[in-house]
Length: 124
Image 1: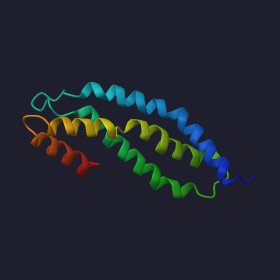
Image 2: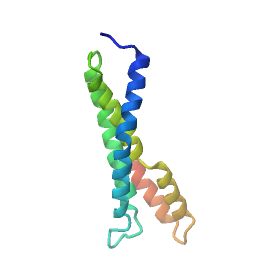
Image 3: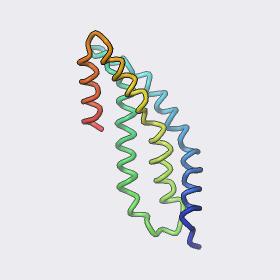
């Protein structure tokens, strides 16, 4: 039975909502790494790791998607899209990244803001 685009999109978004909390929980767990690098304790390693992991997973899901086009089963393509939209969407943390960069730029040593932003954007 061929499913229409609306049904697939609706089911994917519902499925994404089910996996999204796991991305948020991982982001929360990674936040404990912030300030953990002895010499560079100013560097928010947890936020950086969350954004890099989310970027890698998202790109991987986009790369895998074409392999499942035309597949009659919802679960293969739906799972990829749910991970891409739900899990990695909640794992990545743009608002925290922007707040951290803004905090660095407003500090006594704004070069850290430029450095952190450059490292994150270049790596991601």
